[in-house]
Length: 327
Image (cartoon, rainbow, N blue to C red; front, side):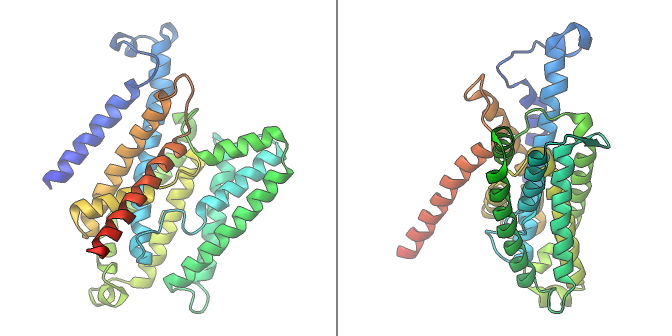
């Protein structure tokens, strides 16, 4: 409990201090000045605070979703994108950029709508596979997700080939992931969906803890295995679809953070889930802050930062694993 309290305080500290990080120094006096009289007020409240909130919720969702998938599929390398959610979203966004017909729906930009619809299509396909004879097995669902991921990735390549330079640049930039230009009013519906799904995942952590020991063990302790697995898959896919619609696909967060807290806090999914959610939020907030300032005035896509961290992280894990086997 003490560790969780410290992590919660660190989360609050990160969210409150990260908006001050940037190439433009903002005096405290400007934060309360009327917006029309202060550029710093607009930068802080209109640009930095929304992207910090979006980054924290996205990191929390990716880490929590990653842990949920790792428990369900009993594979520590499973990620929130394992079932092809990001590939489906990316294909719809690529198609949107190729068509080049901008629109908005319920305050959401066209790319956000296209991304979320792509994620929903993947979710409906997964539910269709799960309803087939023998399709409720997690290995069948996992295989279907991997196949869909490859199919959508191939379609994205086709769309990129057919795109002009402008559309191709937009597709490539979106696929890198990032929070620049995030507006709270525009992103609020998707953030609320992600928050509600995240709360559901955290509430399901006790069931996930039992499922980690096997379906038979969980069923003997009163867990409705089939319905729980489908509920976790549905909620996680919706959550990931929402955050991908806001920030694009951001890799490695769903692997690095659950792995780290599993090493630090043990195998109990209830504690690891709480740590992963808070730790994922902190991690992505500071990755985004670093992306803003490391090559200022240019900004690196945050997906590049997480990939640069994730690759060496797994090399270290592999090295340690090989050393243990040698001994």
